[in-house]
Image (cartoon, rainbow, N blue to C red; front, side, top):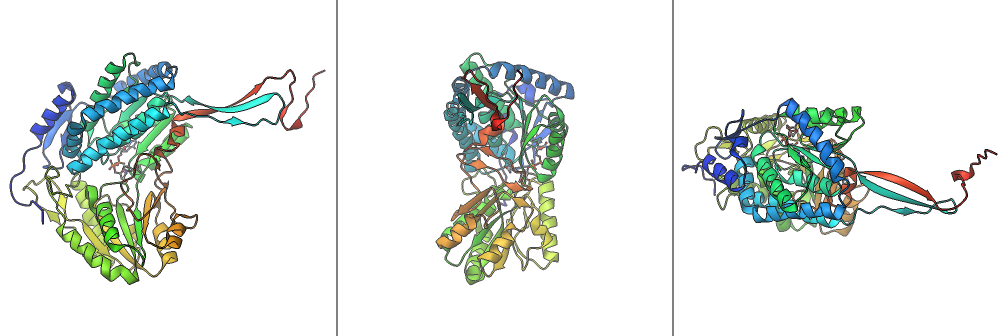
Length: 513
Ligand code: NAD
């Protein structure tokens, strides 16, 4: 077992300072501010960041409006050039930024690097998109008329992000918003402001290489929920993209709607996988292990519910329990570690509360205990938990943002789909089967009710090419690939009369002489 429970761990603070300096982040941002930043690896304080005051946030919105008014007139392919340069900066600094993600969010290095790769990928996607913001030509019912649909920049876009993808989620939104001709205001998680500062420094380098971008085109506002709330309520911001818990989205969605703004909500998931009798169990085991235990269960797409056909249950579940018992848990900087720490004590407590509830309802819990890694009292490492249950009890219907996998038995696909869809969230889902009928049923209108549905891979680890997001309490928003860009633009329907007559639609007559 690779759990490194004994032995001292290298301190994190010194390395954080080196990375921030290497990435060009000015000390004024992180040396003497009021908000302490902790690394989940050791629990130590690694920086003190300066927070934006309400007056500073207000001035930033004002600058953002002015930046938008200038940026919207820049041709879209030229806007794409700035995003291309941002992608170049990310390529050049992938190692440092990826490592900083690991130090600040606690995910293993390969996932930290993967997160930066995702940023590079969305930049590439957005550069191509900058030449493809296509509208439609529509047949008009009137002679001598032409109709079309055009897409225009919409205004400043606020981006509120969660701790678990501290930089990638910004890029999904910002790369699209920028090529669409908008300015951007970013409120990162209060738990991960350092990676946000680093990304802002890289963006500013890209701007310098670009030449004349308007001041304040992309700004960073560090602070807590109150800064997020100020952006949410600000009528100068037509689009608020908010990624985080359903609790947060319920507040943000309502407040943005009250002022007739548009929100793109990316909220909690409660993702399931169904394992059918024909499944390749070796492949399923690997897919389940990554989806359920990876990122220490702190992905929105983490596999939280496993629905296993009774004919393969006794083969699969013991093998899974064995994998849970031997997975490498420890310092996410070390090779061989697959599971790093939870983000903080509150996450650990939420996990224990959920496990207690499952036990009280008759659940058989494997794992879930705290591990003393490196002897740091303020770092929270846990063994992932597997919980066998006879029914989908209440606690299973909540997203507990920790590595708990609830396992349920089913007798056939209809029952499995019923269990699968029987939760309030609707983000990601998967089925393991080699039966074409089962796979297609799962993907059909009577199958998974999620925004993402996969066959023979787990629910986590999406690519940027597809639209990303989910239904029900996940919020309904879509970010990233496909036509998600449309949410960052306003649509105009145009009718052009090139005749000398003025026929009215629907045959209406209105002759004034
Ligand atoms: P969180 O909801 O606690 O915080 C997310 C962000 O919202 C933070 O920046 C926070 O400061 C801000 N915020 C909180 N209250 C606010 C308010 N009233 N008004 C405005 N802003 C407010 O979430 P978290 O703990 O950082 O992240 C974990 C959650 O995020 C999980 O539920 C996870 O599923 C979800 N998540 C969803 C996606 C997705 O794409 N669906 C992606 C990543 C994370």
